[in-house]
Image (tube, rainbow, N blue to C red; front, side):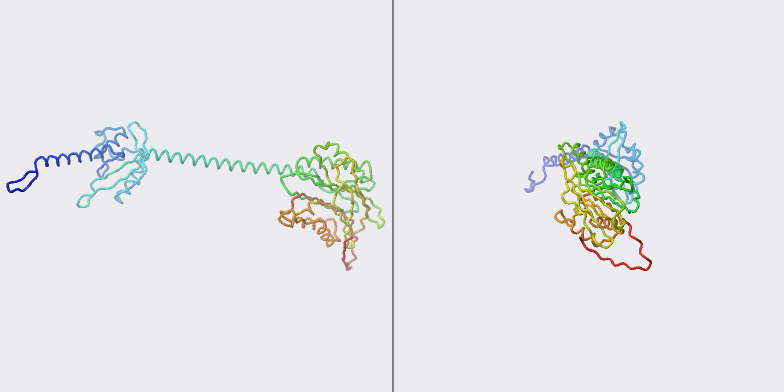
Length: 441
């Protein structure tokens, strides 16, 4: 500072020079910041002609300033698709709103490469409010595009994985369906397709598998022996799956063959026991419970004589035409195939007209009636049910027991087979009334 004549002070020439230098420095710094900013800047006239562009954007495009300023419009820097979007969307929206931000476009560099960018533009107005120029900021969106492409790739991979998983699921369902069909065919091959017509005896049967996708081990059959005699059997093989199915097949054919050699039911079980004992060799012992019987005409009441032998199987039920229930018990009979030397119990009864013999496997009595296996349906409940059911035809008895099985729902943990043989009751006279009573012997 310098002092005047009156002692006042005033600006010195040195201070004025420093201020001018600072202003020039600030102007240079602003220009430098504009030119080398991390984003692109350009200003265009209202028709889109580029009036100013910074070095950053020129560097991205690989272009010279003299080839751009006054010679190109902003839309000329865009790709074909970007130019179309600019003319149909970007420019009209900018004209209506006065500004627009964050629009994704693509610039076309001098070497033909594409540069993904985000563009924001604002219309600058004069003092009278007239639009003068458009200032545009351009951000390099290469990293964002790479991120988006990676997300898209991952999404495509996820979609493909889901599609492959869905295809695998459908294939698995188709395979399960084919397997279930194959198992069903094999299961039917282990049982008679249709029971034969037995003179003087009605027959009915039912088989329910607890697990449709797995072979069961229950089996039954009825076949002729000649001289008006017929054989029948019903059994339950220990275990499930292919091994049980193999044992079932062997048991059926062994019993059929044995019945042709002897008319004693216990001899048929003895033969089967020898076959199973020889097969297993006691390394992986498998056994079954079986009831084998023979029907013969000529009973004392004109009905059918029944002789059975049992190897560890539940008692047969006899629903009498008089309304009573008899149990054809065979205590002491041992499971077939468990020991090389086994004892089999026998019993004899007669089916008078109106009587029905019912055989069943333990899937019926071992059905769960509670949440676990501590509460099973049991034999006593079955006897009570059968006593209330008597008298019943073979078809009626099987239908009633089938309905009982269905009532257990998910409580059925084992396969169940039913076989009923009944002597038809005489038809009542027209207008006659019957008095049905019953009890348990």
